[in-house]
Length: 216
Ligand SMILES: [Zn+2]
Image (tube, rainbow, N blue to C red):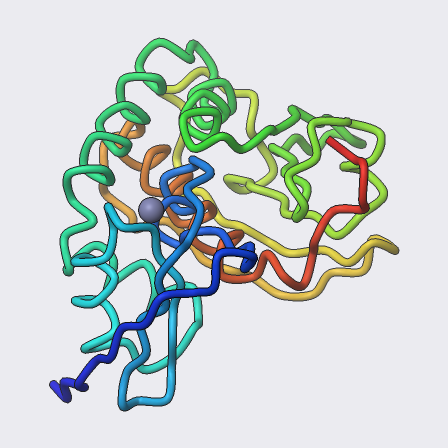
């Protein structure tokens, strides 16, 4: 594996930027430091995540969501991320009895609002790309459908296909499949993994789907 050298410098005090690691963990840490690598990439970080972010930048080769997720994991955003992941599993355990309820509970651990949708015999979990908690707005903006086959409302024990995440444009046009959860996991872990993957994807792509000023 290629490793890059990193350089660190402080942002001026007027600079407003979120810490990427904090965002993945669903909190609002303010970045005061920029970590740049000889790869040409850079990420902003808060002081608490400086070490982790530096480790990430030594191996990061792109900003795609899989890359980010993998490197933050292997660089050990572990104190935070392991705790979040365990919390998401715990939430999924109590979020039943339906598969969609368990997934939604895991998503809420990562601060991601979601909605259960039934439409012409098909059910899925809806997440707005800009994370709006307004269901009407979630239906009309860029959005992600989390689905297992055509169902999201079955009892957990009938869940038979890994969660898949599909991106749709504001006009309802299908864009692409973002990821499919790894098969063979217990459903609680699958829900936590799916929630984490989506959290990472949303962080990595947040600038494409930023909220309107004043929206909450
Ligand atoms: Zn942070």
